[in-house]
Amino acid sequence: MKTLSVNHLLGIKQLTAEDLHLIFETADHFKEVINRPIKKVPSLRDITIANLFFENSTRTKLSFELAEKRLSADVINFSASQSSVKKGETLVDTVNNILAMKVDMVIMRHPKPGAAQFLSERVNACIINAGDGTHEHPSQALLDAYSLREKMGDLKGKRIAIVGDILHSRVALSNIFALQKLGAQVKLCAPKSLLPQYIESLGVEIETDLMKTLQWCDAVNMLRVQNERMEVKYFPSTREYAMLYGLTMEKLEQLRKEIIILHPGPINRGVEITSAVADSDQAIILDQVENGVAIRMAIIYLLAAKLNITAQ
Ligand code: CP
Image (cartoon, rainbow, N blue to C red; front, side, top):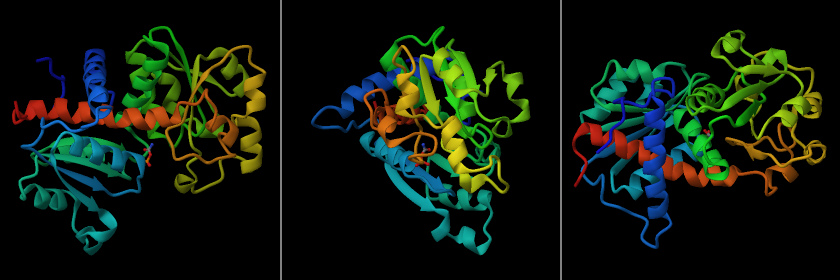
């Protein structure tokens, strides 16, 4: 059996192109499984997974939980707001107490960049990063690339744009790493105030004009404006942002081609994307969500195989 080169999923940065292809091949199999009348397989009936969410989530949390249940794993859920973290317990103490209940794998979302890496170096369990602050969101990038691949075939040479609040986005960084490893060309488009200073060192092209970016690309990933991470104003007004960087039907109609539109969710309708675009046939937003379950089944299955306790 082919295996991943890593024992944890901390970020896309640590994965090889072969790892990405193995995850996609495995997800193809699980996508077929979850479209059967009986959507469950017994693959992970011997493992126990804890979902630790220190930050809000709808898609990622439910998608991981469903993936675990479809694989027949035992699942426990932890929400920081209802836990003893509120009484001052540290992250490592919290996780070690959960692991003492014979948990094998921890899936964690945390507001601090590097939290998944920090944990993986201090506790004895497989760690999957479900989003660490503004750093990485590897399972999102994997499902984005998988969804693009489903629509466009091999991503080698394809032109993919990422537009919007790059500065606060973990989705952007993970997508850049994933798309580059798959051979795609990546262009970022945002106001200068929403581009981190280090970003050009990653070998991506930068553009501040949305129409030029749309003319260039085969697909565009529209990022949410993350108001909750903004302590100061990064643009004069939401109305001006929407006018310059929001994706509208009028802008799409000016192109002499159809492009594929992604959004990781949750959507600010009328800000980075209008409802007409988000609900159009060009948008694959709900395909991304559907593919998220198969991708997360593949990630968990392949990492569980490295624990050597996967049921035969
Ligand atoms: N795309 C994404 O991470 O969504 P959630 O915050 O709802 O999990």
